[in-house]
View 1 (cartoon, rainbow, N blue to C red):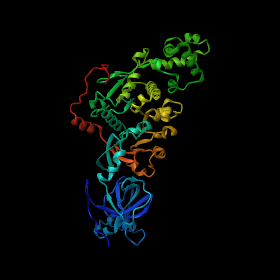
View 2: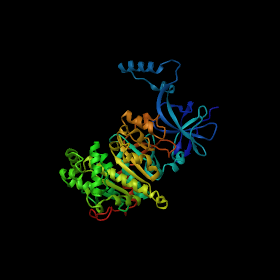
View 3: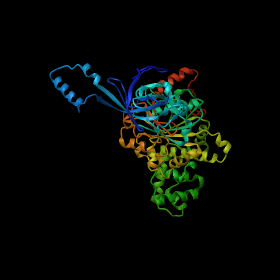
View 4: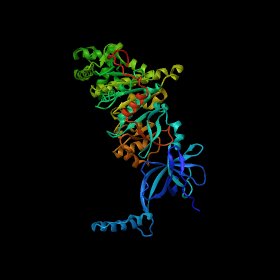
Length: 526
């Protein structure tokens, strides 16, 4: 006897069954539903097992048409009849054939929900009922979605009132944010920063080469300065900003030969020349090379190097000194202030948008090395290190420094950062350009819309969650929609990222006392 469909009531309202399971394997669930029932790729559904209280959570990866007919190719034949009728302006009464039509959902199992969530190792019974999910079906996810919130859970296009984020544990394990231009990378970054400002539990350094995070960069956009968190945001910039900030300077004595090697291709003679200068001039070697004439340098280095070799080095250094980025006074360097702010659980924005690429990459290299080495140094002081917050370093256009990064500080952080509470956040629209060994170190991935198939393949191969069957869903992601693939979640979690401007307005309405400081630049740290 077939039991009637009984509506089940949950937090999301009346839940009716939409289909019955018609085919199963452990890796795929197929179900039939009635003609006209709406369904979307990426939608999550529940299969209610008929023989146990367990529920199977599945994700739709494809949808197919079907028809009840003993005639092979009946749908194609009937469609041909309709087309011929269309040519004669003949109308067809669909009501007569509608009972024969149906759609089939093709799903992948996400897991089995009983007393606890577990991976699926069996299949639901024949003809088990399929229904839509509501908030109560996701209670098991709360402990794994973390405290750094970025949006709400999404099932297809439906957005649920269920906060989604990542755990702070993911920071030292490295994070990747990958999307085609216009799909919401910068919006996601601002949401991450806003959440970190509210929590004050994690250090977050944002290296901004485009000048879009401070004030939003465009009309009607909002930036981090609009959050009103003067206690949680520190801004450094090499250009004048419309609001409180600090001038960005690096001490010449902080720059190492390895930092310059990451910017320029160097011959063996050029590298040896700089090593000799470092030995001859001491900590002030970079300034001396910039200030002294070619002839004087050649003489000081005992005529070991040709004029041409020294000239090339000097031309490169002149470009670096051009914007007054490099200071001769160690006390004017911001490096220690940036590290202190990060260790105080603050968000630090380093705006390098008016620099040439070489200068901007130098800032990234020096700061990353200084942060990593400070944390590594503190590792030997257990009591202090245990109190240290995890630090995340976010790099826009990350493929520039991670393409061939085997000997760089970025590669070292990717390999060793987990041990020293230092994580990288790579933001890129071309993951295929990032070194394969390095991208494999990024344990948490935010996958937004990616048009290039090679980019999707790279992420499928490196993701710590299996996203190999989500090709259709990734291609169909709209701006602001993402999948979070992380070892800290039981499956790749679909999320609708908050629109920063709307979310910020709601947060400010909750705490109207927040006010953006109007202090002048360089008056204390903002």
